[in-house]
Amino acid sequence: MIRTRFAPSPTGYLHIGGVRTALFSWAYARKNNGVFVLRIEDTDLERSTPESVKAIMDGMHWVGLDYDEGPFYQTQRFDRYKEVIQQLLESGHAYRCYCSKEELEAMRAEQEAKGEKPRYDRRWRPEEGKTLPAIPADVEPVIRFRTPLDGTVAWDDAVKGRIEFSNTELDDLIIARPDGSPTYNFCVVVDDWDMQITHVIRGDDHVNNTPRQINILKALNAPLPVYGHLPMILNEDGQKMSKRRDAVSVVDYADKGILPEALLNYLARLGWGHGDDEFFDMKQFVEWFSLEAVSASASRFNQEKFLWLNAQHIKAADNSRLAALIAPRLAAAGVDTTTGPAIEEVIALVKERVQDLNALALEVDYFYQKREAAAADVEKHLAGDAVARMGRFADKLAALDSWTAASIHELFKPFCAEEGIKMGQLGMPLRVLVCGTTQTPSVDAVLALIGKEEVLRRLRA
Ligand code: GLU
Image (cartoon, rainbow, N blue to C red; front, side, top):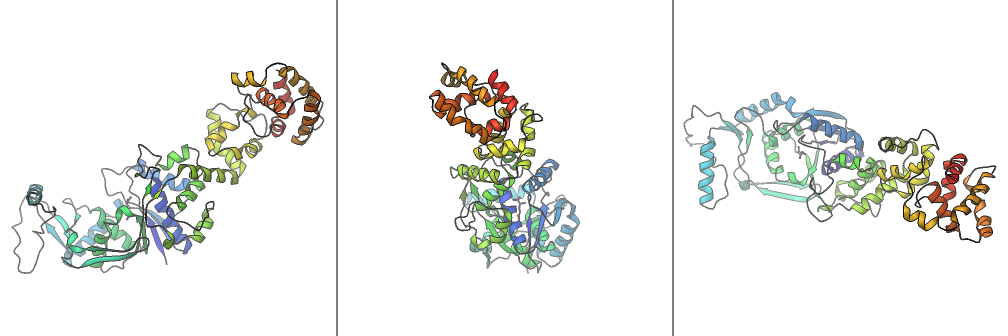
């Protein structure tokens, strides 16, 4: 049984890099009829906040990544971590270290003076025949993991291929602080073990933690999961995405009028591919997904491509769903859609023209109330006898029995011939007078939707 997990630390917003990690973990579980676990890594009590937990849960809900188990909270598992620390102490894989802060600082200064890489010198590590220092009365010990002194730690990374570390590069890391609280790398290990995670799919900022975690798992005689480290997402300039420069939080994307399925579709394409396929849904993605097809190098966020995809998803989306999504935006803009054409029909007509929901909301106002026309448009399209001519066209409209795009369209050619004008000389003034803008879909369809009475009222006005 395949079991994967997403294990965010609740220290801020839900980052889109995190969403991509969650997406790939989720997809791997779904593809293999496995289990996807959500785990909140909140052991950093100073930086973890309930608001951030909520942001993560809301974000997961918004994108629609469902989990089968959890959320598990590390802060609720301290007894278990303590139990495993005790186990490691008893088996000799961990030991107490009574170095004071001052001692550690002195150690560091000395090593740096000698041009050495600063590291714990293992003075409290028990060895056969070694005499340990006398236990000081005023120091609460930390617990350190007894890292093997030689040999290597290696794994076949499902994304990056073989990765190898020499144990000489690794410290005897602290697994419990003086107050007994367990540290990050240790909790991850115990959790992945207890939760029977078979595939650890996470960002490649964790590659350096992996050899440490593997050593601890081995000391516990725990099975090793498969590791797959996902490369970073860079911004268009090839820099690490930052909150200051880039939209990084899931909420930013919701605010920008991005559809969740478009975000997932785009994130799926970042660092993974299935031929030239660009537009697909998550069902299709799960079918296609494999870790082997994940790229080992970082990928760049391409804004243009992303918005293009969002536009495709808007086109494909159900109109009543889109209506519900833009309702708050319309309300905020004071557009009353309760009288006038059905909003779903308006959306059907204009949605091909937009790349995001904010733009969609902006496209619908003139169906409900005329916009204030720009002076330049009035000057350009309503000069000379254009206004009188529109009066004559209003008479033709008024005489129509059936009010459809087709019946309106049928008036155009004869009217233009009669007046000796081109279609643009009819369409543009009509748009300016009825809509207040020249940027509209086909004018017959627009007039049909706005309705006979309202079109005539606006034209006569
Ligand atoms: N909590 C870690 C993070 O948010 C992830 C740890 C892991 O996936 O192993 O970066």
